[in-house]
Image 1 (cartoon, rainbow over the protein chains, first blue to last red):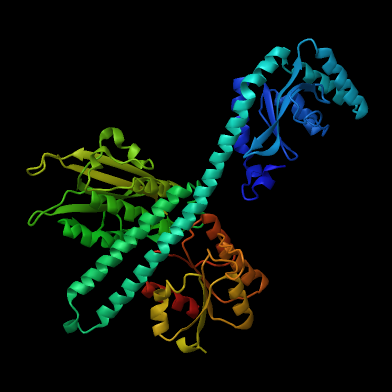
Image 2 (cartoon, helix red, strand yellow):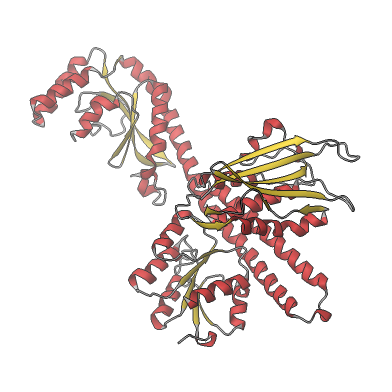
Length: 422
Length: 138
């Protein structure tokens, strides 16, 4: 029974990469060649495999076909190599067999050569091929029988255990990817429903005679809309992280993106939340050149600036009447890039964490207080998207003096996004 | 002759359309006529019997809600898009409205000529109306 039959959706046959890596590692540990046969495919470690066995395989002479019936004994294959084989089971289902050895045994070298000669005669190989095979056979490892048995005794169970663990790991990753899509679905549908209802309500309120419509109602509706939209971005961050899809952002199709509009949208989304905390979000200021268009994926770039603005607001110290805090957004050319930098004053990033904050799940040491819950998904998402646009991200955080009456010093933190100019 | 909203019929293929009905409220208020299909089978049946001016398509939909085993597989909507365009040769504009953001799916949709894709989660009904009307004008 093959892997394909065990789980039709598993595509493990296409995922030989992990098996080859695993067998190579095990081959290093056991110091003998290892191969795993599943259906008609043979996956092997590279140890000594590239010579004799590979050649034999190329000639389609059917190695590893004899004696692999699961019996625990050393046997010689048609090609004259000694192996030890054992059926391999995953989840109690036999998926094929594993063979260790592919070597000559000390004292039995002549037997191997005779077997090769027999093979050449029975398959009517021409002299040149037979000669090449004899040369390659001479390069195969020669080990003592007790050594091969010792290897088997020590390692066969571990090999099967490793295979099982790796198989479960791969299965788990596939399940997570599927689950993440379903989770996104179950979160984003109700979120979309709330967004739609609120936007429709807002439209109705805006159409109403202002004498009968309290401004607070419109304000609240806007608040609900903004918070729900932020929630949708958080749900997407979570989904993308769970999916662990390496090429989820490939952006083969890029469009011309109005960067100014995207940054403005991000600022608008957070303006009222920031204002309630005494923080003013300054409009983006272009320096040296007007706002350019950038070639990229608009929805993803939108996500970049939403995440950056979210962090800038979340980690700013609150202002108070007569003393506002500011979040500044400066846009300027920088060599072959166009740079957008967003700065805030508040909780900083320690020098040794500047790189770590771009890792999934990492939260800055100073940011871990009870009032600020961060998922650790925002900046990694930013980095991932920007890099897929052939850009880069930088963070800088510096103490700027003592905070009024507070024990904590404020940091000026600047996140710079560099995107290639069109 | 330009069609009026009341003579424009749109098929929305969406299993959660009752939950998301507010998304098309401004369109309905403007007089556009909507028809709904909740699975692939119903969508194909409706497309067989009627000509629509536009299709809104979800990607994660069931194959057939009446089947004994509900196959709510991923990406049946993509298969449906292929059937509509390649097999049925239906040429009406299609807007995809889905939570799916897998770039491979998006590329496949683009290859089919579907370029208008809205991500569910933060589509404003007012924005949806603008998108749909611009597609109907083209």
